[in-house]
Image (cartoon, rainbow over all chains, first blue to last red):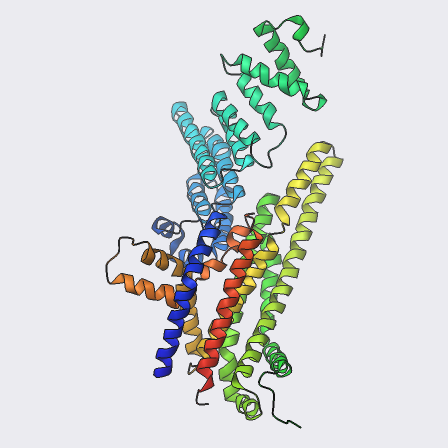
Amino acid sequence: MKRAAAAIGLLLLFGAARLPYEIHLTRLQRAAGFRTASLDLPLREKVGQMGFVAALSGFRSLVAAVLWIEANNAWQNVEWGRMAGLFQTVTTLQPKSILYWDMSAWHMAWNASIAAFEDKSQPSEVLRRRAERQYWEVGKKFYEDGLRSNPDSANLWEKLAILERDKFDDHSSAATAFATAAGKPGARPYLRRMTAYEVAQIPGREREAYDTLKALYDEGPGQRVPRVITLLKELEEKLGIPADQRIKEGH
Amino acid sequence: MNDRAPIFSPTRISALAWNTLTELTRLKIFYFLLIFALLVIGNSFFMAKLTPEEEFQMLKDISLGAMSIFTALIAILATAMLLPKDLEDRTTFTILAKPVPRYEYLAGKLLGILLLLGISIAIMTALFLAVLWLREQGAIEEIRAAFTQKQINAEDLMREIASIQAATFNANLAPGIAIIFVKAALLAALTLMISAFASSAIFTMMITIAIYFIGHLQATAREYWLEGMDIRWWTRPALALIALLFPDLQAFSLTDDIVVGNPIPFALFAQTGALGLLYVAVYFLLACFFFSNREL
C-alpha cells in the first residue's frame, strides 16, 4: 500500500514537473499548424461513435481517408447531398489538407451544380438554376473555409478565383483572389497575368489593367503571351495611348 | 581478483534484449506484417477511380494510420505478455538467480521490445515507400504516355510530373514515422511499468488500453483545468488528476497533419521526441521501483 501511494505520488510529481513543458509544446505545435482540428460534438454526430473514438485516439487521418473513399462511392452513386456531408466531415477532420478542400469544392461547384442543372426529374428551369447556384455557393464555402485554415495556400486562392470568374462571373472578386494567390508562396507564374485579365474586364478599371499589363509586357518575352498583347492593344485604343508609347507587336 | 558482478552491464542487458527479441519472434509477432502488406497493396482496389493526388493521399493516410495502430498494438500486447510469460516459464527465476539486478532484467526486456518495434517500423516503412514509389512511377508513366500521344504539351508534362512528385514523397514523412516510433516506445515503457506490479497480462492490457484513450484526452482535460472553463468545482480536481497522472498522447499524434503536407520544424520535432524519451525514462524508473521488491 505504501509503495502504491509512493508510486502515485511520484507520478503526480512527474506530472507537475512536465506540465509547463507540455503547455509550451502544445502552444508550439498549434503555432506550427498541428492539433488544429476541432473534435467536438457536431463531429461526433457526423462520424458516429467508433469514428469519433478513432479520431480522438490519434487516427484522424485514417478516419478521414475512409470517409473520403465513402464520399467517392457516393459520387459513383450520384448522391450529392451525402457527398457534401461527408466532405464537411473529412475537411473538419483534416483542415490542413489542401487536397480535401479543393476536391470537395470542385465536386460541389462543378459536378454537383451541373448535375442539378441537368436534373431531368425537375421540370422547372428556374428551380434547376437555383439548385445549380446553391451548389456553386456550397463549393465557394468550401474554398473560403479552406482558406481560413490555410490562408497561405496559393492553390486554394487560385481555385476560388476561377470559381468567381467561371461560375459567378464576378471579375472583381476573381481579380482580388488571383492577386492574393499571386502573392502567396509557391504561386504559379501566370497568376499575375490572370489578375490583369480580370481587372481588364471590370468597367472603370481600364487604366489599372493597362498599367499592370504594360508592366508585365515590359518584363520581357516571357510575359508577352498573345492575350497580353491583344488586351494591351484594345486598352491602348480605349484609353487613347499616344502612338509612340504603344507596343510594337503586330504593327 | 574482484569476482563481483558489475552493477551495470551493457553486455548482460544486450543479451537479455536479444533473448527477448528472439522470444517475441518465435511468437510469430511479425505475421502482422502480412496484414500490413495486404492493407497497403490491397487498398488500390478502392482507389481505381481516384485522381493520382487523391490516391497518394489515401495511401499515406492508410499506411501511416495502420503503422500507428500496429505499433501501438505490438507495444501494448507484446510488452504486457513479457513478464507474466517469464514468470510462468520460470525463466525469471533462472535469470534473477544469477547476478543480474532486476533493473537490468527490465532494461533488457524494454530494449528487446524497442528493437522489435524498430524492426517492425523499418519493414513497414520500406513496404510503404516501395508501394508509394511504384504508384508514383505508374502515374508518371501515364502522364508521359499522354505527352507521347500529344494530348499535353511539354510545359504541362513538367508541371504534372512535379505535381505528382510533390504529392508522393516529402521529407516530413521521416520525422512523422520517427514520432510513431517514439509514441510506441512510450506505450511500451508504460505497459512495462504497469506489468511490473500487475497480477496478470490481461489486467496490464486493459489498464494500458484505458490509459491510451485517456491519454489522448489529457490535453483537453489540462486545458479545462488550467483555463478555468465553465465547469463544476468538483470536476476541477478530477481534471487536474487526469492531467498530472496520464501522458499527453495527442502530443505524439502529429502524423495526422504531416501526411497532408504540414511541415514539422526540426526544433518542434526534437522537443516532441525529447518529451517522449523523458516519458520512457520515467516510466522505466517507476517500473524498476515497482519490480524491485515484488514478490516473485
